Image 1 (cartoon, helix red, strand yellow):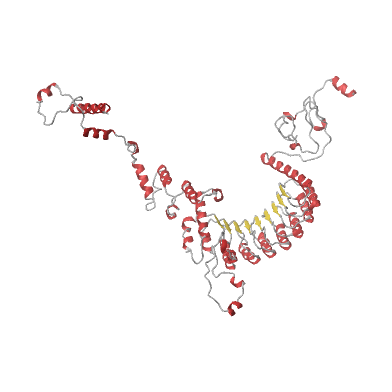
Image 2 (cartoon, helix red, strand yellow):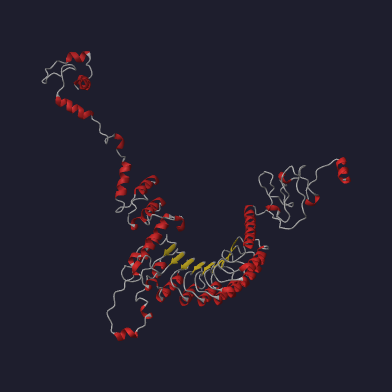
Amino acid sequence: MQDTLAVPTQLVASRSSVSNQGPSPTAGQAASITPQPSKTSPTPGPFSGKPKVSNLHRMRRIIAEDDEWSLAIVPLLTELCIQHIVKNFQNNPILKQLLPEHQEKVLNHLSPDLPLSVTANLVEDEGYWRRCCTQRWPVCHVAAHGGSWKRMFFERHLENLLKHFVPGTTDPGVVLGLLPLCRNHIRRIHVDQFLPPVQLPLPPQSGDQSDSGSEGEEEEPIVDHYQLGDLVAGLGHLEELDLVYGVKDCGMNFEWHLFLFTYRDCHSLAATLKACHTLKIFRLTRSKVDDEKTCILVRSLLDHPALEELDLSHNLIGDRGARGTAKLLSHSRLRMLNLANNQVRAPGAQSLAHALAHNANLTTLNLRLNCIEDEGGQALAHALQTNRCLTTLHLGGNELSEPTATLLAQVLAINTTLTSINLSCNHIGLDGGKQLLEGMSDNKTLLEFDLRLSDVAQESEYLIGQALHANREAARLRALNPNHVILPTRPGPPHRPRSQDTGASRRPPGVPVTLWLPSLGRTPRSRIHPQSPHPIPPAERPCASRPTSPKDGAWLQPKSFQQAATEQST
């Protein structure tokens, strides 16, 4: 141990001796300087003896290493300022005055828990709002909110407030106080729960008073659900409103009045819709909306300047409500109407068909899971003979049979706008399937035709599927090359087979030229129309191993006089 400590001691001593000596004086200075006696004891030489214990401990403390101390971690003044801004951002928000690179550093260190009153109108960085969303909700579909994280945060935050609002208990200022912060970011409100007010137990009544009242009068509560009028009036950019009047996860506390859309709720919502001129999509599903409430809502939507989609599916709407909705088709710009899973029958379908025959805006009509039967189905089929705008029709589960299929087959032969039809879960039958197959032979625009569970023969369903495949292929070619000319399918004379050395067969008769691909091991290429300015591909030109006929309009190989005479004699 003494040997290992000797070297550092010598080094320290030698350094101290060198530092004590200093620069050597010149000759003149040496003469003028007189030696003075030293009051201290002389410094021992490097080999004068063992070092003192106190000096040894002091020396070891000096050369000991500290992992946490380094000149490299001393922060710059800029970093200290940024840390101070981040720490005091809630009380003194400073952001716009900073340089762009400093703003980025501040935003990266801001806490997502800051009050919205501080960050709503000041922070526009999408990265910050993404951290806020991912910290609060484990699943985030930003595409449903226009691709904006800030819009997603405010829309979902407002939806949570509305879902947990209890009338008579929650302060309305909690919701309305958010308007100054989110009015420019809310485009969509989706609320799948409206809590009813808390009902206190009623005092006991005498037998006479209990018998005089009816049970129906006690179903509706005194105070209704949250009224959206003031909130929607402050949202100047609202485009979509999706509501469900019900309660989720009620468990053992289930009561029917929890799922009641009252008349006061209906009148308040109707006034809200009428005042919102920017609304494009309105959905009110699973809320027990009957005919009378439907008429109240429809009257408020007549001549609406912006409404394009109306969804009232999974309710209790009957023929009277369907007639009111048919009137809306003539006094609005609706493009999509969904009345699925209601109680619409033949009279309601006839009213919709009458409006559809004179409509030029509606593109999608969904009437699945109703009971319009053949009477209503035939009325809709007659309307489609004159309608030139509807592209999607859903009539699944409506007790339709062969008469409706016969009229729809006639529609398919002349209609050029329908691209999707759904007749699943009906009773079309074998003959109805054959009628639809005949209609599909003249149709070139239909791309989807659902006939599952409709008693159609497997052969008819297969052939209809082949026709749909040809239509989709033609649509794909038109999308890739709008100037491409497709020859119609037509039967032709029998073609002679190719020579045996190629192992390929001629194009079968009746197959469109654009759908026939030669099996010669080459890349499939479609034949170009003769009138097209593009030349015929080399793979399609005749060669010695592929004799062609002048009937096909192809070129003949030059032959010698001997070959021609031999062929003529044979």
